[in-house]
Image (cartoon, rainbow, N blue to C red; front, side, top):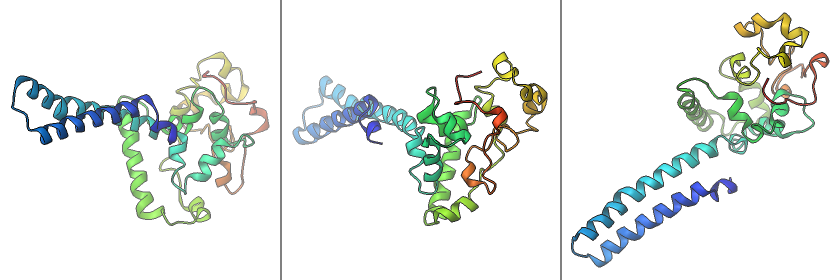
Length: 224
């Protein structure tokens, strides 16, 4: 996460923290009289700059946790992140990671909960992942993790439909799309399945099923 450490928000957070520390250390060393100016400086050192540091650090932290590099930092998720970066993989994760709209944030973009409280719910789910990693998966061999770690609930088509609306002609012109339109919208047919566009991470499946040839396209393109 070297790039994140040198981002403007990160530098601003460090700067606010350093200024606050300098003000407080200066006050403790010099012990000046409590004049109006001293009170203003203490207000800045105890309030404004610490709040600024906390706010920018939280925003920077949020942005850093949306990166695929962050998701792959847990060793049991490394194969998933590696598959997403693999330009030769035909899995949905790799195809969407080559999309310039959200490539470096593909894990977060595809797995995030949407709606009014989507960000909060997604981050709560992320904390659950952290807890499970340190309590169950930290020492688990990779081959074992592929068999035991599964998505918590079936992947919802609503996540796909954030970009692929199912309303536009670019989507509807495919005969299979038109034939399964209502089932896709109801979620009774999964977009990310062997019978449709293939698994997101096919290397985890016993049959290794990829995307069917009749639905093949060079890459996942712009939203449709």
